[in-house]
Amino acid sequence: MIATGTRIKMCGLRRAEDIRAANAILPEYIGFVFFRGSRRYLSPEEAAALRGGVAPEIRVVGVFVDEEPEQVAALMAGGIIDIAQLHGQEDEAWLRRFRALGGGPAIRAFRVRRGEDIRRAEAFPSDMILLDAGAGDGKTFDWRLLQGVMRPYFLAGGLNPENAGRAVRELTPFAVDVSSGIETAGFKDPEKMRAFARAVRMEGEKT
Image (tube, rainbow, N blue to C red; front, side, top):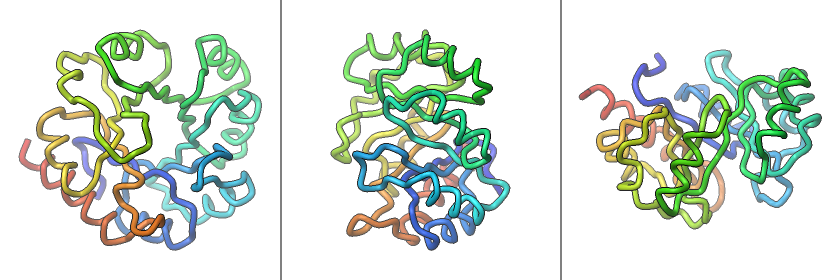
């Protein structure tokens, strides 16, 4: 049964066994990475093949960096992804074009280093926002910067089974987003995936 508290997003899935593990856990979201500079990159064809095995309860998020809105909208129209997650320089004009093309929900990611970054994120007209350390080094940012955030957000950056419960307890984010924190030797680890989900859901049950 999917939790009703803080949601879970497991990102960077790229193998059939990753999908099978996710289906057993049922996070609310999984992520496919379409950025060619990532070692977790999937081609649209690879993503389409994996999507066919995803449990219907799970929503698939496509992760992009400065991709053309036409390409993102096409992946959504083709049923390969349900939500777009934007990590580049996509601005309000990009978002307007995407919506004009029939694009659906969009998450805009923001790297958090100072309070100004939070204000920019809260003002951006995407459907959802993601607040991230942004350095890709598996480290968290200063969570004290999130005090007073009024808008629901995905929390990312350095999360793992050991600190996920604390993140939920201290911040109560809309969702927690994990990738490298559930990997061993560069690949998704089913035990770490289960441990992460367990930590989030156990903490959610206390609230």
